[in-house]
Image 1 (tube, rainbow, N blue to C red):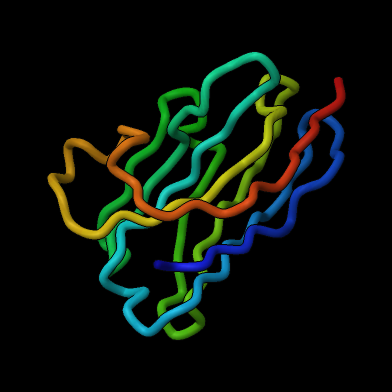
Image 2 (image 1 turned 180 degrees about the vertical axis):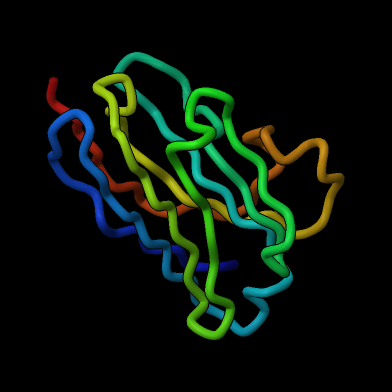
Length: 126
């Protein structure tokens, strides 16, 4: 089991930026696909972005393309989500998650991920 700890959330005005971090335990970090999901009040947890173990492959929710960038540093066992030009509709609790194996085309599916962090709140004011 991988322990994940998110950080970097906060309150920001529309148009601002935040950088989320997800620190993972263990020595096999580079073998996991990492993803970010988010959950707004009263809504289900939804996929935001994913990155392959090597970092060569990424995938984004359409509404965040061009604004968010997912990355990882395998030497630090850490994944990141750089969020620019934030909008009020980006307000949610953001979670990172790990996935070991599986088909790339299934990376947006919540049940494909084994381990989850506790979440970090992102609030964007208008």
